[in-house]
Length: 478
Ligand SMILES: Cc1ncc(COP(=O)(O)O)c(C=O)c1O
Image (cartoon, rainbow, N blue to C red):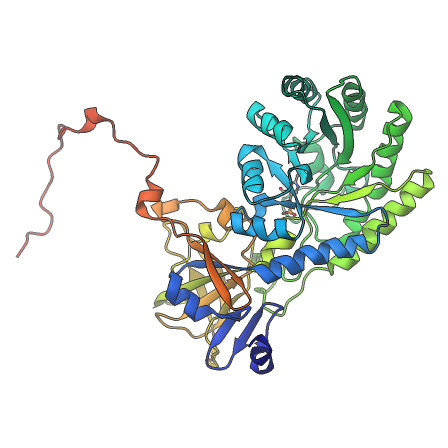
């Protein structure tokens, strides 16, 4: 069936195609049928694309790094249990923050020894769960070491403890971040995470002094500031110098080095708002170098920097979130009112910006396409959601002319959309469907009124009518 489809379809991406008459398919499933079955707005995740993305980033680095590469999926980018399950089947480890992300990863069947607990100011219950299940704990401050040791002692466990360090600032100095109005170096300095090199050495010594702890790797995470291979590669000399210093001052040479996440791909919806002078992303756009180029730059840079100091190559760790999930997600949304103003046309859809991750950064910009295979002429319009804030999903967007009842697809919504969505205007969050091949399964149901107000209670003393206030007749009836 899939072969027949691909012969007649216009392929937009590995998992997206448009078929004459039928319109958009996500893998082998017709988008219009999904919208009819599950309603809109609807997040659709492609399981095949998740697997492809995972394998591609793993293989890109593994092909260039002999000691091997471990991929810790950052569940924060998409916390749906079925998404985590797909990646557990692929063998992905996990980067977790706090009890909920650990618990979700375990529930979805991730092997506990492949989990790592990251984060600042870790609560005791998160440390306890990590210790009990056998996850690694990356300490973010010296004060954590004693806390982890006493929890490990009480549990009778020996705990692998990694050292989260500050990104190496020399390489980042003066590089403007795409994400915020400061340099990447200034951001690294300002941000709360990680230990300075001197404290990293002190942390290793403190870990070595505790029989309940064993040192287990060095970690940093810079984040998605610049989608450039050179930026990641530029960190190599500083990282090598840090490993050399730890080795020289503690006698422990870290066997693993984790580079965090921040890798992105293809249409890269993050921080691409055309308000900066660009154009709205199209399906065919590719803003970012292929991951193999990132892997080449990082691995070559690290190999050279470590060799220069006579150090062995550690196992590499990666913590990709958005690289794996973003392009696997599509959000289907239905057009309602099309309103014509004096200088623009608004296409009003049922998806809210807050459900697409647009509340996270108004500079995120996704490609939007019509679901139908349409030859309608393009019109420039503002695609807007229903919220009582401006809620612009796409401003001055060139789209085929659409009318009430038509469907649009917002691409690359798999990362940081549903996971960070809010209930603004008390609107429930969309359902999520997982597609693999020709099957589609509901993996998160739509939130109902009862879900949105599930935490609420009106205290009994408010049951009475109250004093009230006079109410004035406005327009007399009849
Ligand atoms: C420690 C850590 N690792 C990995 C990630 C995932 O980043 P991304 O989704 O940009 O790949 C994050 C994101 O905040 C993080 O804090």
